[in-house]
Structure formats: structure tokens, C-alpha cells
Length: 548
Image (cartoon, rainbow, N blue to C red; front, side, top):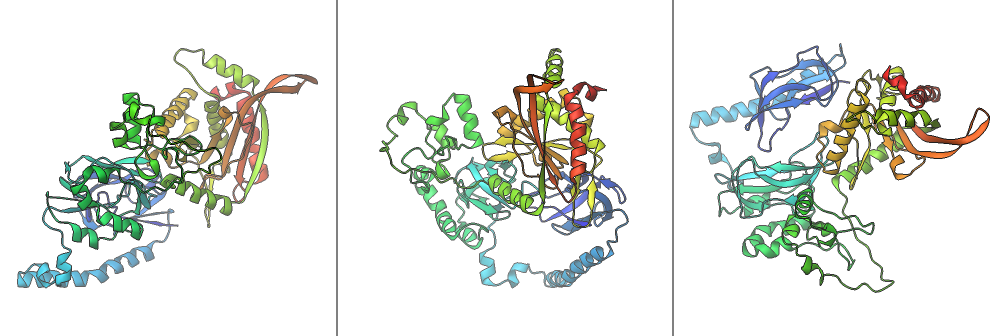
């Protein structure tokens, strides 16, 4: 099915874009992540990548031409697909808007008056004063629908230069730094730390020092924010100016616990990435820091103001038997994980195949491989490589289900599930079948480090054709996973266990590993999944065959 690609909004102030260069032409094959074009915005010329796969069927804006945000840019679909209806409907929509614009333009030219002269008094009240810019919640990933302010790095009244980091924004993918494209004074903050809002909702206002922006904030309703949050945020500028210290430390208390609100009953500490970095640099034990952010989250100022002696008198005695709990607001990542796993579980008919592999040869192979200088691979690296080679022989398992077709992928991109404090991320090892064991090991290690520091980019978590989840390092012998759609299967890898086994009619000590593959029955039949696991068994039980 053809996908319409519209002119993207590549900066918070962008209203239209100019195609500087097309890097693909009509008829070219497009892979997810390919750079389609270079788009010139009001800020810079930026690369625009595709989030779809298929054939480039139509280009709606030629090089050097300009169009508004969300207007037709291109169409991607299947080769030979009829897209005439999509093109004509897009043109008719644009045409219907042109007469009124042309009429307004000619009227302005004839009278020589500015458009503001004909606007109502009410409309003129909402015009932005000179030098004032409204900063909205940016779309920092292709799937982002709303964002949460993890940390403000600037406060009201501070000077902001172009390129300064305004805040850390938590998306469904990661926590990312958001920089300012404007210079001026931070006049207003529309969302407090820990609060969420939809993309394009009011985030902040920047302008000349002393400018009254209360009417602008009042008339710019933050989409997705509750009325309570809106009411409190309207007072923020006044409070910040009069009592900056008091305003910074004020927060809603959502916990009935008398213990530190910065950790849950599982002992996990909630801390912003910037605060974590500062604590590591200063050698501060974050478990001793009391957070002043939303729901007790530790933020920058808590690390700056931390004094070990000050924490001694903070604690409060909790009587034995007292009920105690913490309420932890759902992160954007946790919300999206919950939504997608539920969709996968209840739309894809899961079934499970269980196997147990002999790991004696794999253990000997790994020990010998790691004896080489500057070489270190894990059992998980062996599993990733073995799966990649097996998938090339069984493309049905490397497939994706759509309502009207099935896509059999000829490339192998393996997603490796990595646990992070807020849930689970799945960075992707691209073309895993073509990589060596050491290359796979280096990639997975790098992704794991980035995941823990919330530095994975959206591009590094897209495009998987098969997923592996390994809990063996935690001593879990076997488990089942939910398919990471649009994949057709996911492999759950357990621990290597020393146990009695039968070999040549004799009971001896052996080492085995249990694996469970969850399959989408719409694309992978039982026999197909079994044949894949048989091929996988050959590679894992005889790893040297992967080097041939």
C-alpha cells in the first residue's frame, strides 16, 4: 500500500521547506533509513530520511521548489502501483486553498496595507511582540506523540543563546537534549519537570527581557496538559521572578510514603541523565540524595546542593507495620512499551516452540576464540550470528505480516533486547549475517552502553526483522517473550545449565541451554519454525560451521 510522504517539520519554527537535493529518483528502491532528500528549512539544510520501504513512485516537489509543512513531498509504494488517485486528491486539496490566499494577497497589494489592519481587535491581541518566539514540544522521533520534560537546564529569567540546551525531553524512544534555535531571555515555561504534553503543545516562550507574555501563554493552550497543570503553569513566570528559589523547589507530592520519594519499593532511584552524570563526576552516592523533581526524581539542582551532612537529619522514623508506597508516574517509554506489547499479544496469534541445545562444543569454541589477542565474544554473540545465518536459509521466519501481503525480508537485521530502568529497548544489529562474531560483539556492547545512558538514536532502534531476548545472565533457565512487531518471531534464550545428560547410552555431566521461539502463526507455521530451529541447532552445537 502506497505511503504519502509529506514535507516534514524539521525545526520548531519551520512553516515551509525547500528541496535542495533529491538523493533518490522515481523508480529507485527505498530502504527504511535511506536519505531521501536534503531539505532547506528556516534554520539549516538537513537530511530527511525515509521511515518506509518500497519504490519511490512520485516526487511532488522538484529541486529548488518550496512547499508548506505537511504538503505532499513524495509517494512510496510497491513498484507499478496505481497512485493517480493519491496525486489528484492531493492536488485538489492544495487548489481549494489557493483562491482565498491569492485573493488576500492581491487585496494587500492593491491597498498597500498590512494584513493586521483588517484583523479584529481580539486577533491582534494574540500577535507575538517583536522578538518573541513560542517554543513548542518538538517531535524528536518518528513515532513520538507526546513528550515529558525530564529536566530544565534553563530557568525563567536566564539568557538563552542559539544552540543552548533548553531541556532534556523524554520521548517514547529515549531521553534527548533539546536545543534552542532562538536567542533571548527565557520568559515562560509551559511544562514543569515531569509533566507531559503532546507534540506542538506550548513548551516555553523566549524573547526580550521584561516582555509581558501572559496573554500569549493564556491563549496558547497546551494540548494534552490537564487543566490543573495549565492553571499552575500560568502563574509560573510571576513566582519565578519574585521567589526564584522557592519556585524551583516546589513540587506536587504524589506519595504517601515518609521515606525518600526518589526511590521505589524495589530500591530503584529515579534520576535525570544530567544529574546522574554530575553525581558520577562528583562521586556522590545517589541513594543518599533526596530528589526535588516530579515524584521525587533527582535533578540537576539536587546534585549541586547536595551535602552529605545535610542528609543525616532528613530521614523520618517509620513505625513498624506502617503502610508505605510510592506512586511512580508512567514514563513515555513505559507507556509505549505497554501499548505495543498489548497490540502484539492480542493481534498476533502467538504459539511457542521449545528446544534444548547441547552447549559443550559452543563452550569450547568460545574459550578457544577468546584466547586470541584482543578478542572477546559472549554466548549471546554466538546466538545472534547463528540466528542470522539460519534466517537467510528460512526467510519465512524473517518475514512481516500485512493485511494484504507478507514481506519476506532478504536482509537480516536482528534486534537485541536490552533492559533499561524504564523498560526495554531493542537496538538493531544491521546485516548481522554479514558481520563477524567480533563485530557483532562490539556492536551489542556499544548498544548496551548507549541504552543504559539513554543515548540510543531512533535510527539505531528501527528496522529489525527478528528479535532475540536473553535472560540467561540472570540465571533464568527458560521463558517466553511477546513478539516485537512487525517481526514474525522472537527467540528467548535461557541460561547454560550443568546437568546430567544421556550420551551414547550413558548418564554423564553435560551443559545445555533452553530456547523458546514465539511465532506469529499467520506467517510462520509450526513446521517452518521447527525447520528453522533445526538449522539453528546445527550452528550453535557446532559453531565452527559458522566460520566456513
